[in-house]
Image 1: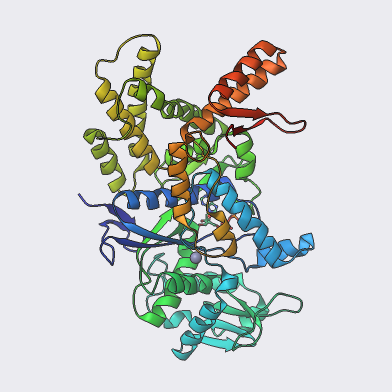
Image 2: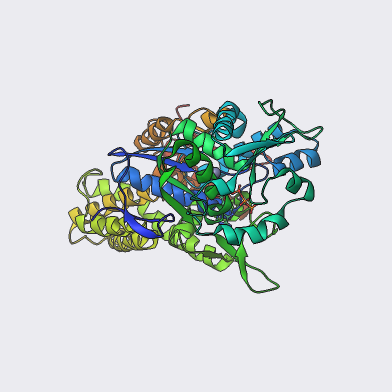
Amino acid sequence: MALQLFNTLTRKKEPFVPIEPGKVRFYVCGVTVYDYSHLGHGRTYVVWDTIRRYLRYRGYEVTYVQNFTDIDDKILKRAEETGSSMGAVANTFIEAYLEDMEQLNILPADKYPRATQSLPAIERLIGELEIKGFAYPSDGDVYYRVRRFKDYGKLSGRRIEDLEAGASERVSEAEQARKEDPLDFALWKGAKPGEPHWDSAWGPGRPGWHIECSAMVRATLGETIDIHAGGEDLKFPHHENEIAQSEAITGKPLARYWLHNAFLNIVNSTSGEEEKMSKSLGNFRTLRDLYRVHSPIALRLFILQTHYRNPIAFSPEAIAAAENAWKEMAKVFSLNELIHQLDKEPEGDLSEEHVATFVKAMDDDFNTPQALAVLFDLSKKLITGRNIVVHGGNLDDSAAFACQWRTFKRLAAVLGLEPRMVSLSANVNARSGAAGDLSITSEAAALLESGALTGVPAVEIEEIERIIGLREQARQERNWGEADRLRQQLLDQGIILIDHKDKPTTWRRTES
Ligand SMILES: Nc1ncnc2c1ncn2[C@@H]1O[C@H](COP(=O)(O)OP(=O)(O)OP(=O)(O)O)[C@@H](O)[C@H]1O
Ligand SMILES: [Zn+2]
């Protein structure tokens, strides 16, 4: 059966048919860069990274674009509070975002357009809307005439009549006076004194949030794309407005499939109710804080244990359980030695039965919890086998064991569940706003895998860190003999330890 996905637009599961056979044009709304990312953001981007990886696994050539909203009131506020500029705040948090997401094994996007780098495209779009009668200037601002777009509300299922009631309450009197209709939204905001601004046909100012994405989608992927995705709060008004803007101009659907993920929630200690993890509610855990205590990949596993359209409740217990599950799973990655010992091929056939179950789960609107069940089943079998060998026994069928191991590794990689690698990513490209170069990461990954780059296969890095931890423990217990033994053990494998006065021990390979 073909891949089925739930389309918010039609409110049902549909077979996935890309516009161009074999290719997927995929746009995900990115973060507004004014603070560190929290686990809720982590959830959103792990979900889309996993779906992107799965589409690649299914043989599609995926072009994945994710923007940075780097013009926004919140960034401006942060700049004012810290005596900085909007550009400097944005750059700081773009960098932090890329670092944090890399830890979650999220692949770099093919392109990271930014609002500040898309102003000509934004201006052109507003100009076209004006010519077509969908936009009107008013006192330095430009607004979108919502009522003129007949399909308004088709994505979120909201009716104009219902929107009317709430619309006038949300905006200031001054803004209200500039609009023809309370339903209209800003495409361009005239500059206020002292604020950063760009020149335009309507005077100096800055773009509204919704028009940024319409312009960036068009500039990077074209008029109609295959998948447009984001967190469920973006359905309305953001995605509804993107549709109104883009489709009013092109007369074509902006995206064939609209996908939305549910939130990561946290229980409010006062009300006992679950609520969205969010900056404004002050109930968030930044990824960086969590990384101090948890393996990022355990957090990724935690996220994937729930279907992307179901909410996740954050709790320390649930994260600890995922951490344990990952520790268990991670053991399987260090079995390559054993596979060699058994004289089995690291490359070769996969277990068809497991692959089929995995694909069936993922084809059903990306059912990651079911797909994970396949990995848990394989890892249980593999660890049982390993224990037999470790205790001097023989495996009944070592060829089947090796096949299970290969299958595990291949399928785990589709979900991005891999022990963390040395940081060698293509983030530099993202920082300059240019296309992130995927080949660097995959090349680096291949090199790491072969051991050519560090002399240490990626899968062994966790093992090295584990031994460093044991040595540290021995040192603290003043068990110098044991500490020496562990240091020598690593040296025999070509790993030199470097002790520092004020930071944890680091390591490098002997050749360098
Ligand atoms: N708790 C959450 N769970 C899942 N996704 C989230 C969560 N919070 C934000 N997101 C998603 O992250 C993406 C980036 O959002 P954005 O930068 O606008 O943050 P935000 O929604 O303003 O976050 P916050 O509410 O913390 O200020 C969006 O797709 C949004 O839906
Ligand atoms: Zn967007």
